Length: 137
Image (cartoon, rainbow, N blue to C red; front, side, top):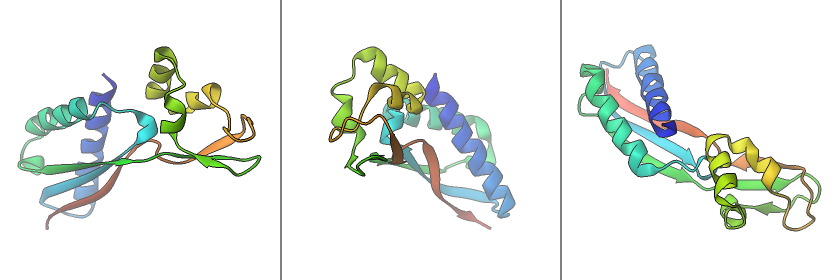
């Protein structure tokens, strides 16, 4: 499942960053999930919890905080800005599923709502990232 792979990557990255910073224990990991990624939050949280159980002492008792980052798309032609939620309603199930796995597919299924140009960029709300890691040295 997509959410499990992302959860595993986040936790692996957090452990590597903690080791680099010489943290003995990680207390909290703050995660941002871009709206365009369309992650199932319940599945993602469950995956984090299960993977944490398998990681041992470094992640024992760690708390995870998840924030959704709203998307912003901007037309390169007219500079109009809009959000993914504005276009999501217009996508069929197959199109929405394709964007879920590969957010760049949005470029195939949408146009600027103002000038109808297909030339736009995703300026915010794409991907999954670690905002912060706190722990004990």
